Length: 473
Image (tube, rainbow, N blue to C red):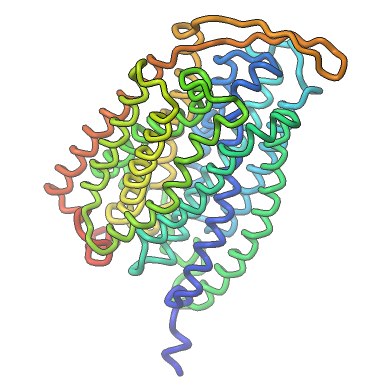
């Protein structure tokens, strides 16, 4: 009886899987908003008269505050100092407020030609809203990752992280598959409003986790109460994290790998329209195959890592598949939509392999008390390169090097005559850029595997047999 009282709540399979499910649903809501505008590029250009560069500026705004104000790193420190309950609630509040501003800036009432800081006011406001959302969703992401590392330490950590990613990507799939059709029958702002409502539900659901986290803390009375029952985090720990070569290789691999995926998804729907001649209202369904494919495969590969190891090898194979896909999409002659569908299926496998091994590998290098900050630093580099720099770069390249023609279309809507300019693009150069990121990812993954052999991180070992970082710290 006494032994049962001392047992931690995380030792209960039902409790730890429930905790994973709750934070995963909150991330699903965030992922929906993160990609809700991806299928809307052609409609935003036609209805709001934005250029590709302005769309690229808007989508790159995701990383403005995270990068230039260092909010992601600050968020990681807040998580390590204050714990997941406080950090999670703060994150969801930022997501809600930012998405609400984003929604308003996309409404017809907000459109104006007024220029502020070199950009049209609605573009700037949409960007600011997306930037606040970016701070919140990234903080929520590192919170969810640390929550799983905390609840599943010594258990099925890679599987749990894989399932968390899989559930969250349902949000991406729903956004890519539905927002174009929804905007087509209503307005381009409507899908973003749906995102606001989803985040409201996510806030309520996260309150359930807050209750569970309190019970977990109560079940481990021998640990300090602050920071979720972990050793106190110190600012000097940042230096220890940055001194790890393995950490840097994972961080660089993360930013390069996601540069070949997330910015691609921002433009994938337009690629389907421009190169593969798919109708605008259904073009998002092809990119939507990617997240739904990863839902099944990421947990499977995570379980392989749990039981068999080979984490660095898994990341190399995934990077190779990413390169293969972008090479296929670059070839101008391969312009049948069946090629695009096949490429998305392969991309889904590659997109499952790398994250399933990359995120569970970080606790092998970094002690648990520093995990929030370590993940935040990785996400910071990812924001700088993959979520801010590359989307704007692709939009700029399209506008300056890839325009193949312009078409003026006149139609009558509700008795009023509207004239719309449709711009046609050649996506060969942007896809070649994405292929370059895939090649770089392979190189960095090979360096990581070589460093693992030299330093003994245990990336090729099963999760449950690897030497914990805390013991080595």
